[in-house]
Length: 108
Length: 121
Image (cartoon, rainbow over all chains, first blue to last red; front, side, top):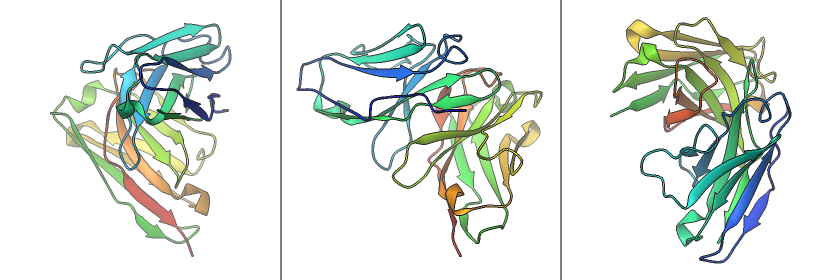
């Protein structure tokens, strides 16, 4: 049960686009189209941003989008804004258990 | 409005046991899978356990397997986590979260605010 691999940090300027990768294996990300992404501010509970790989919950900005290629899922934030500065985690089902990514700190 | 409220945390000594509870409201609890997720101080999120709507499917992370047990009472709209043989590595904020569907495969669409568990001599 290894954590999914994410870059420790990603940074960008306001208005730019950034992409956070989430690399798993053929037992989790590669098999199930069920990767979800969560945004977390310090001291706050995580907030769902993407589910089932590409879907956005109601109320989440269209600047957030998800994709997948092989064993790697990605979260793209376009038109980066100061409020996007937070930690981001991917999450996947793995057959008999679930697993989070290592987390990525986004700096704007 | 969906609400998840955790309780039962606190300071315990290594080797002790603790039982966390999560009281759910605002939805039909028995229709959804439920999960426990934890976050150590300054650490990332770690999935701990998940249970399907009808308790047929239970999963635990290797780090807690054999020590932690997840359970639920649909009549009381409550989720539980029995934690035994606690160690310092179990010190974390524990979140209760709802799965989007009845099986544990789905994402976590609602979260509680978390309850702190500290394991220290």
